Image 1 (tube, rainbow, N blue to C red):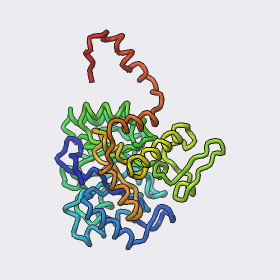
Image 2 (cartoon, helix red, strand yellow):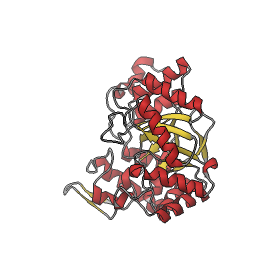
Image 3 (spheres, rainbow, N blue to C red):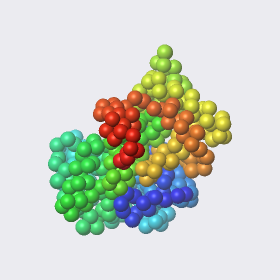
Length: 351
């Protein structure tokens, strides 16, 4: 296992991390597992060098945190692990302050997460999503107070617009409040919207990127085929039952193009499509860690094989071309061709 620094911090996290959304019994068959299976999975992840475990206060209605905390406690593994959780979604229909990015909900959520996780501190606390109401100042001030109190070590953002991440970073730098250590985003071969805004900002700011949904809810696993004409998805698994692919339209022509490319590379390289899709992410220098949403040891082993996939420049180019979609405004104005109208032929291109 390789490890990366989480953004500008000194915290080292495994490049493949375990997303714990399926730990628990309250979300239905395809999003849950038995307690013994969860214990086996977390133990196997630790044995393979995974030290980063990510959950949220709403995963399996709080049971994910409870199980993860109990399992790490039982293995005496808490101190060698990086545990992150998230807050933001409403947790009580009767309490209007049980969701959002405000100070009250953040404090309450942290206390409850600490109890469920059986720990007295969180390595990383993420805002799960911005509520479009709470000023960034309030959120950062509350996070700074929690850092000073020792209840959280680092603060991060998840599923936020690019301008919000930039505002939080600039405000933290200029006021002495805590700055975002990392941002969690849905990022995979079929969801590359993060690249223009977020990746360029990360290269500028040094903020870490933790990618979730790396296999588009299994669409990139190699288990499915797409019939765009009949609007059908074939293959056994969560996707055919829930038809949930995150931010991806499964009938977009790019999906079939990417699946064909992965199948061809799998035959050539001797690695399954899922491993290749993950290896593509691991080759991105901006990606700090990739969250694996696995629920079996077999899936874990297949995902771990991504660190051994020999993706050369030719294979990377094939994958990039298969998954590429036209840039949206204003990025057509920032192509190399149009930049020549700015710089001429002096070859002085800025980053």
